[in-house]
Length: 176
Image 1 (cartoon, rainbow, N blue to C red):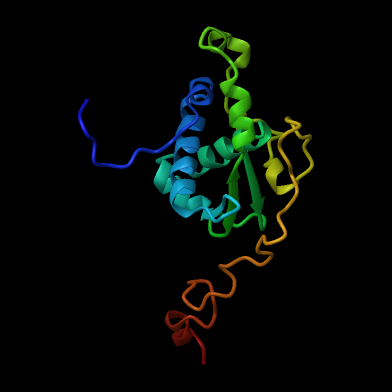
Image 2 (image 1 turned 45 degrees about the vertical axis):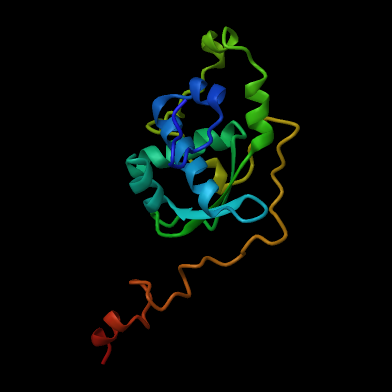
C-alpha cells in the first residue's frame, strides 16, 4: 500500500450515506472545521457567510442544511440570533449521534425511511428552530444544554475592524 502524505477529514460514513447532497456538503465542512478549530469541548465557531464560502452552498441552503442537521441532533448550534450571516454561530458535532447511525448495517441504509432530506426552506411556515431552541431532543444521548464556557456576547459587535462599527477607521470620515 502506498504511503499518503496528506491529511484526511474523518467523517461519519454511514450518516453521510443517509444525507442528501446539500446536508452532506455541510456536514463535511463542519467535520473539517471541527478537526482544525474545535476547542477541548468540541466547540468551534463560524459565520454562515463563511460556511457558504467553504461549503459552496448558497446562504439559503446553508441555513436549511444547518437546520436539518440540528433537527436530527447531528450538530448543536448556539446562535446570537439573526445577523444575515455576519454573526458567528457556535457549533459542536454530536459524536454520540454519529454512533447511533453507525449501528445500522449497509443493507439497512438502503431503507428510504432512514434517508435524511433537507427541510423545505421554501415553505411558508419555515423558520430556523435553532434560533428558537424549542424543538424536542431527538436522541437521549444528545444534550441541548449550553456549555458553561460558551461565549455570551457576539464577537462581531465589539470589533474595531467591523465595517458596521462606527469607530472603524474607514467610517470616521463620515462624521462631522
